[in-house]
Image 1 (tube, rainbow, N blue to C red):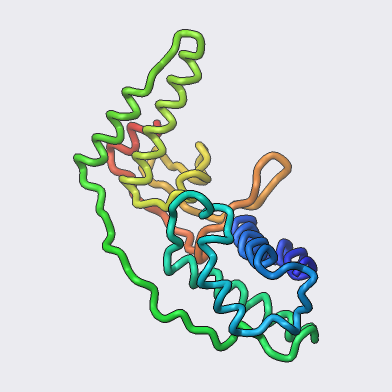
Image 2: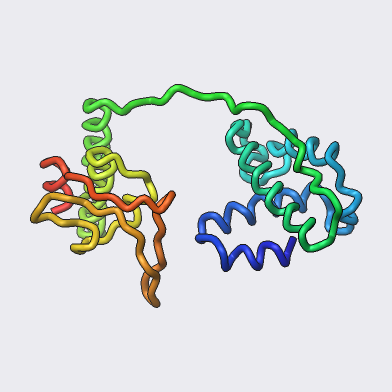
Length: 213
């Protein structure tokens, strides 16, 4: 597992690596490292998947129930991990290979209405401003309103909005367009890769242009 996660760090983006690490950490908490890998059978793996709520630290003592999609995510990652163990010759059969959790339950989307969005902006306006840090807090309010406006007005994912830069590569204020593109990392800036590598350009409504200008 240590060798696998080390190699994975070089192959995937940082967020994916962190997800793999979270799943593997929870797995190692359930199956102590002294347990021989060939003794980890399908039955015990099914037990692990059914008890993630009690194992993963982000769910402990918080009365939170793990979602079906997250449980499926754990299964997919561990299937991939143990497929590599088979290829490397540690085991003959992947204990997660034949596990099926069924279709995950679906929840109805909640669509944010224009009134909901206005309430969010009003809540930002009402954030307290103290004289000692007035400049920093005022800038924070402006940035928050720009962040929420571009997410709502252009339909951006959280990570896409968070990784926008105030430059022509991302924000073309003259033509009122936001560009969602991959970004190579540098010494001062981490790399950013779009989900599914789907570069696209989106027209900004006037209220978004005003918020980000």
